[in-house]
Image 1 (cartoon, rainbow, N blue to C red):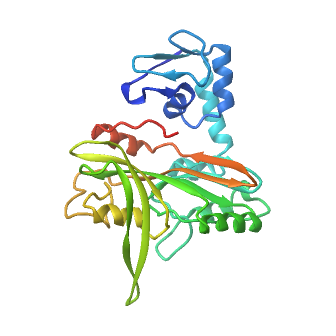
Image 2 (cartoon, rainbow, N blue to C red; image 1 turned 135 degrees about the vertical axis):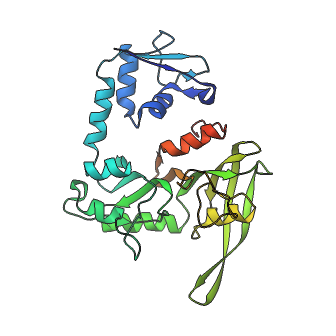
Length: 305
């Protein structure tokens, strides 16, 4: 048996290793390169390096009979709790002595609260990954937002990572599918957001760098880089300009989500930071429902550099 993948225009000019991960899952780089070197993965019937770019019309052949089985074995190996992972589409991106990086599924809270029956901290506290220690939450991610999320394994790591977030030395990139066509292709939103603590009105400065990845009259795909970290910042700012995120049931225009996928179309795509001058970059694959809406709205996305 062999697997054939045809390259569509949407993935034009993407590296072959990234293209394979986009289609078959978060496969380790070493496994992809091994199969490329051995000729078990070929581009247009030729051996190529992992850095080779693909273009529309290219054909990728995978000849390894056990390739997909190996992928599943790797996924299972890194699952801290198989039944939880399967149910919530969780995936461990990185697991080292100091922290783990997850691709968090939409619909699960980071930590316990009055309305949270299940959360990542409680789930991973019982996993072998945190045997002899416990998970420390070092930043926030909304329950309905998917994507990259970090948990520290030690108090020292938690303090360091928390400091990096507080000092804005962690650079986050989100992807959002919002309603309608964004007027400007790039820029900075710098405005005041209002929230309430009981009866007390609180005004907070919020700043986000935005870039339109693709757009049409129906929808826009945005790359969002928040400078500040206000609660629901991106969702509030997009509603303020009249282009709320699809699937947002709180920050929306009247009847704006009727007939749209129930999931919030906001994904924490990438996180970058440095520790001891060592660069760390982690990216999370897009959920299937996110890709499905991209396709239905005729929006094109190629992995960010």
